[in-house]
Image: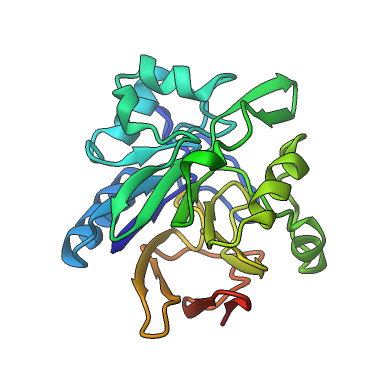
Length: 269
């Protein structure tokens, strides 16, 4: 199967405003990059598109609708910029609820399931997952978990690169434990950190995707297929959709990488 991923769009109505995280945000160019991202997905034969949250910088309905307009068939999870209750806010913006993956994994074909992590704000700057995973519905198949926030914390690693860390869910450890206990492979796809990163522990592989609002202005293509030994092969290709001056380098993983999963050995690159 082939998936396309965009995250951290941060669409606004006033393109002249300024903000930054690792690097300066390019609000004026983001709509064009969204369109180019979906053009790339069409060329690469993407079967499922995922938007991993922070679609609108201020969580306003007009900006959410602008972000969603080119992506009518995408699966979407909300981020911390999409309102205090992002799932409800996205529905209010016109996103049909069945397009939002939930913890109860749905089939994506080829024996692979897709689930999604829904979050809410508990207090200012404090975010939590709304519920634990319904692992009984996942079975022994491979599951892709679409999430705005990371499930495996990368705080030390990101800070070691002299980059600011955007934070973890307050109940992150309660999510990680049952995933780590699975024998079947789980692939966590996340944004939020505005870095390209990859990390595996046991049967859990987490791929953090670069932001669309700031360098590397990234769209991601994933190709997943069984291998001849009964395991799994995953290829990640990152495409940079623009260029701009950079103060910091958020590329903590190669643009092209291949991972293989073998039962009993976990993920290896």
